[in-house]
Image 1 (tube, rainbow, N blue to C red):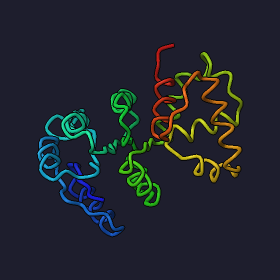
Image 2 (cartoon, one colour):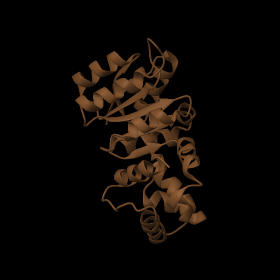
Image 3 (cartoon, rainbow, N blue to C red):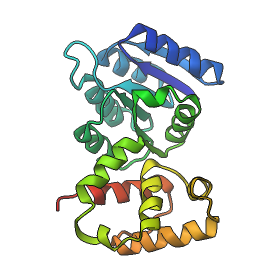
Length: 216
């Protein structure tokens, strides 16, 4: 796997580079701003870009805008953005791209090395990785409205893990269920939310999140 990092804080940028390389992931470039990110992605064609949302010069959404631009210009590039805060608008913009290979993590999650590396590999493989806190806030917007009320407490647990990007096997492990039981819960959830089954896990996750983000 070949990765480019865009992070303005030198200490964090170097730390991410070292962490990935120590775990067998090739970091082909590490840059400090959005323009450099786009330039390096176009030149090196990495599998994944790990991008801080707020980059110079304005420290608002330069990283996100650069990530969206490179997805338009090099659609095969997976993007994992990191932020210090839950910023739902940014999550929505990322998820509007239904091609898969997208993730949104809080910077605190980077400190959990195993979780971070799992997210990196999942997104690079075309999946989705969302921070549980982002998912919780998306759920909060919908918890008292519409078909979401039809779900059982267990189905809500399964839905939350689906939205984070976990596979059926990962959900089964987290909830101590059989994979068959998880599959039944997933089918019931998709039916109750009027969502069509789809072959790819990332499409399933994006479909659920598109519903959760939709207007009341």
